Image (cartoon, rainbow, N blue to C red; front, side, top):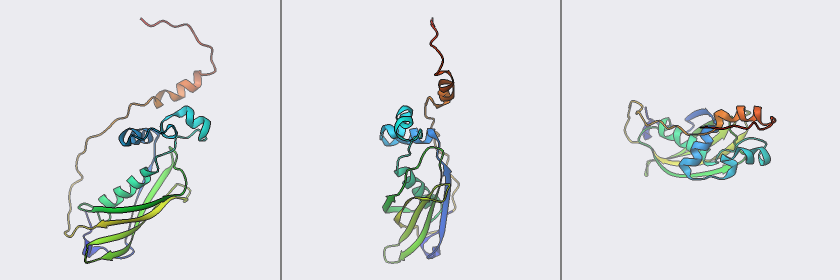
Length: 176
């Protein structure tokens, strides 16, 4: 359900909370094409990033986009611009809350300016900025569409096993 331009008030707010998984980080890497080792390489993360895969900064931008497109203003919203500052890294297993708050409305263009903030589970701001959208002009109530699901093939399910056997001596093995 959306909020058309005329129903939106200065100070209106909406949020979305999501826990970032290791699979989310790797899936975002595949979808974006950004294969920086800090996002996808567990050995690199162990050596250089306190053992945690670091999320792509724009993952927070994607959460904000989700709030705008699904909640406030909601379906029918057209994204015009986004300014974000990334203040601290987001790691796999962090829980992020993306919040948008209406700052200004411009009747002549139908645009709405919203303050945006992403905060982690400790309440620390990890990203902040401003979004400009064209709000829908008519009220819509739509069912959530069925979208294709994706599954990322990762080796994370074997990570605990590999760590458990790492100190053991190799055993000769043959596979036929």
